[in-house]
Image (cartoon, rainbow, N blue to C red):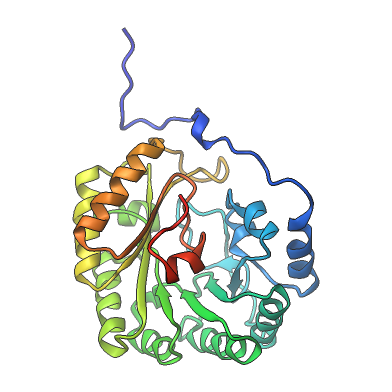
Length: 296
């Protein structure tokens, strides 16, 4: 009899991760707009499985500060290297695109820019301000950890985004293996506490991936830490290997296990939870910010 070692990577895609593509060409409008305005989305660069669905709904997660990251997380397909200089016109182009798409909830993320003194915080703030001026939308920011720069975090908090999202991604045991040597779990928790103390009106959100080799007990302990640090919005999704260059999947979790984990997270105290194989940190972000029922 052959047994499967749960700690060994698995490569076969289970049936629940095979989905139909949206019909029609509605996604072309968003894709062409992004291209015409020389913008970058994490949807493209992270090879998100929800890209066509979101584009068809005329929504996207804008990725600012370029398309080259100064870190090389093992799960991420965004290019790593020496980034170009910051584009001063980018905030206005993001705002114009958000207006043309008619967005009511704008999510802005970024590559990590450890090469910049403030990690790009000021550029982030300029983008928030430009979006606010262009359209009456809720703004959700999804920045890096700013390499432990508390002043940079404070600067972005003072821009008063309605939602401050930062992905914890995995459990402390795997933090440096998955996220690299510059990651710091204690700073992640301290950052959330700092944001909540500086502006209690901002809603704190985090996201984690499953299938990286973590145990359920480790996940629940981490969720308890994050809740204690002030996070109330949570996304849980399946890690999918973007390309052979990234680390392989250790385990695929069935949808019913995600549902159970979502219920456990609510028992811990998270107010709004999106938990499912295709859930990503900004997937259905608007629904998550205004309701307690989020699509899986």
